[in-house]
Amino acid sequence: MEGEARPGPYRATRLWNEITRYFRAGMPLRKHRQRFKKHGSCFTASEAVDWLHEVLRSNSNFGPEVSRQQTVQLLRKFLKNHVIEDIKGRWGSEDLEDNGVLYRFPSTSPVKPLPSSHREKENLETFSRDKERLFKLPHLSRRTVKKHELLDSLENLEKTEPDITKENKEDELHRKEISQEHVQEIWRNIILIHLQTILGLPSLEEVLQPTQIVPEYVIYNMTNTSKHGVVILQNKSEDLPHWVLSAMKCLAYWPRNNDMNQPTYSGFERDVFRTVADYFLNLPEPLLTFEYYELFLNILDLLQPHLERIAIEALQICCLLLPPPNRRKMQLLMRMISRISENVDMPRLHDVMGTRSLMIQTFSRCVLCCAEEVDLDELLSTRLVSFLMDHQQEIFKVPTYLQVAVQDHIEYVRMAQGKYPREEICAILPTYSYCKQITPQEFEEQKVSTSQAAVAELLENIIKDKNLSVKDKKKKLKQFQKEYPLIYQNRFPTTENEAILFENKPTIKQPMLSLRKPKFRSLRY
Image (cartoon, rainbow, N blue to C red; front, side):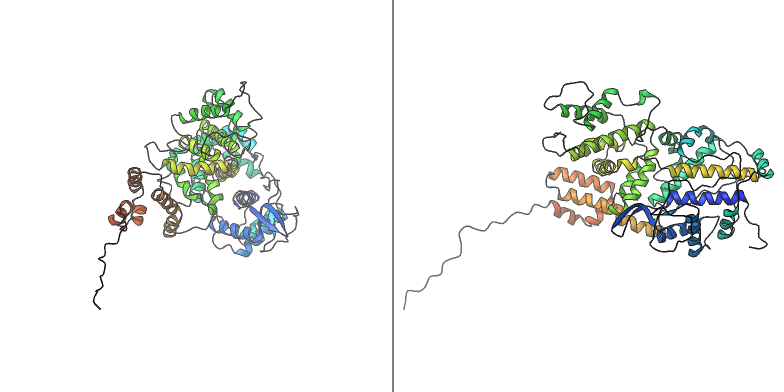
């Protein structure tokens, strides 16, 4: 627009990189069918418009005035600059409409080079090498970026070439050292924002405190991994004992791998399984730790078929919070029980119970339980272990979008310090839109229909369990009433309703002989 200052090359490039990173990290991908053929990890143009439009409207750099047509224009720029491509790999034009045509992300990075001699590489390998440098991050400030015309700034961006100006060099001199404390605060805030958005909670106060997030654990779990994504511990004394690892490997690859150097015999596999089970059941605390019990308990609400992807994303982040030794044990245990459950060649490990049920029942208590004994722990933990076992490969993948978000934020703070060296700069934390924002009232209504429905189902299972004695059933119901009084009251509004459940109605047997007096007819004629 004439007379209005346009963003310079540096800021425009930064805006472009910020948008493309958020788009690649947050845009939901799924399978689509087109012309009798399935295409994985892609999206329609309309889905992209819907998602990106909400992101732009909620972003302070653009604001709610961004129109849907402007979003389409931006997606056309994405197609032209190979941020996206169609499912046949074509790009370079601006031939994109708000319709059902399928697109995907290319393997190449869409990030444009910044006009600076100190550009940071964006991949996870570089992040691992430079993590010590990233742990020295700047003072936050209260200056925000002014809003500019979305399309004007992005169209001008295509014409800009990276060049180092005198102003850029001076900015480098003004950059301040970023303290470790501020880096840790950025990690905590990014993680809290993602978790709160994914879980759909109005607040995380009762679920997770910022002090419970240890950035050193998160970074270690993301960067010190094997080619299979399993955490590698530098301190071997914290690892599983060698005999446990050998036993787990023997079971996971049965019968192909047996490095225990012992002859097999009838029942050998059962003895090996008991060895592994005894080790995990005798750990001092569950693998998910007592500290994160409430956090993982809230994820149980998401273990519904229509919320599967959200649950996986939530568990990805939550499992990153674990101490590295715990995460490694969790990964190896889930991989083992998943392989055992799917192994048709594995002999029966229990006379009565099936292999899958045995895995879940055996290890549920060593994965999740409360520090204070709760009767419902086993029921709740079995649901979680079942889900973890079925989706362990996806759950323990490293969510690189967290690393990208933190790097973007650190970079923004550094640039802001260079631009305004004598002012306190407060970088705005990014917002993420995984789903439409709802009001607290709508949240409470949905909470009743999802989480409480699952717990109510547990109550019905207790009521209908014919294997429980009257004494045990009363004990479990009493405990349930203590933990979930409102759900219990809805099921048993009055004491009379509760009494009916245990009322012993006497059965009235029909008399074997009729006691009615016979009618005698008169003998007179």
